[in-house]
Image 1 (cartoon, one colour):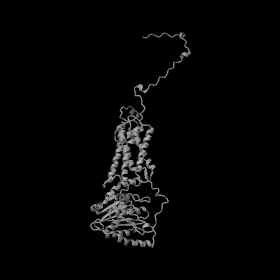
Image 2 (cartoon, rainbow, N blue to C red):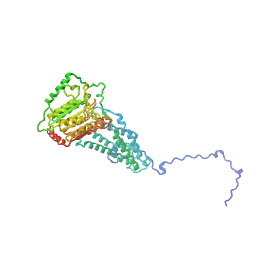
Image 3 (cartoon, rainbow, N blue to C red):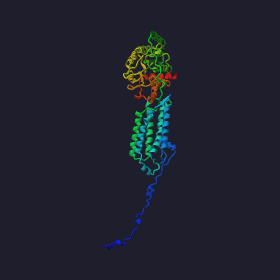
Image 4 (cartoon, rainbow, N blue to C red):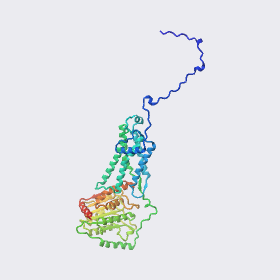
Length: 512
């Protein structure tokens, strides 16, 4: 048992001064630094000059380490790097437009919302900052700012290569040979796009985030890139056609029906029959017929003259080309483009040419409708439209075997099947469900006529090669012009019996 405590005698208690009753005030203990508790002392992120981030991004573009260590850019550096990259792309895009151009702010700003989504996906894929700071591996990158600065420049080589490819086709620095040129063009396009995507994915993996999040990021990046190509093809620069569309632009001249006009039209046919040269024995000749029935647009008059000149100069057809044109200025010098005159012209050519061995090149240029009729207008003269079945009947009736028929009109793909045969080549400016482009008042030539005849057929005597080389050029120009209903998708059909005839003709013309 414990001893009992002695009782307290309250009389013997010592008096304590009130001042001594105040407890001793203790100084607050200084906070222990983090590194005193066994953790690493935080170090401010290293800063590199801006050009090191450019170099790092370009190294990442070729799947090499950026060599920036754990450094992170400042906000001002990120802004500078973004503006420099965007400026380079805008400068290259300006070269894609020949002649005057206007800057389309909407086309340039719209894709930036996808950049924000990619930035969010990258944030999701990167490891948390605390985990990244504790990662001792010097090869692992850190921070969303570092990712954005590097990825902006990692995609730039592929993007500039894409723009260079388009520019080379537009300016004819790069030629695509053969009928599969369009597939080759888009194959190269997809290859460069894949290059850019893989470079960004590889760069993101260097931040050592969870692998499953990297997979999610890759899917988001690929989906947004496909969406951009599919739904946002607009370019920041577009041709400036404001001068041609000025409000005070002169109205096209109107036909004045008079007795002198009718008499001049009647006198044209005997003169044409006398001037049209006959076939030369032993040669495969080219005879040309240009038909432009729409008088309201100057572009069809210019295109008619251009096609006729190409046939005369490049295909040895001087004295063997007829032009039927509806225009007030040519009412007394060229036959009207009417169905009756078309029949008369085809019959006249059939009389002069060797219908079994010579080649008829027939070019039709006008507006087209969804019922596949070629628009005709020459007010106050009434002109009926023509359709592919009617044209096929005229050619069959005339007995002309070898036919090269080009139709520059909207929905002209609907003409291919009715006109196709073993001895016919039919090429059109569009398929059966899309419009063509370049037939407005501001156009010098239609996109199809310019690319195929005015550009390619001045360099080759092969209609199939000219068509194949023109396809990517037309597609690029329509993209730059922001064609609203999608690519025109020009069509071609070549009969097996006509191919050796055209090959022989090409060989003879090349020797000239």
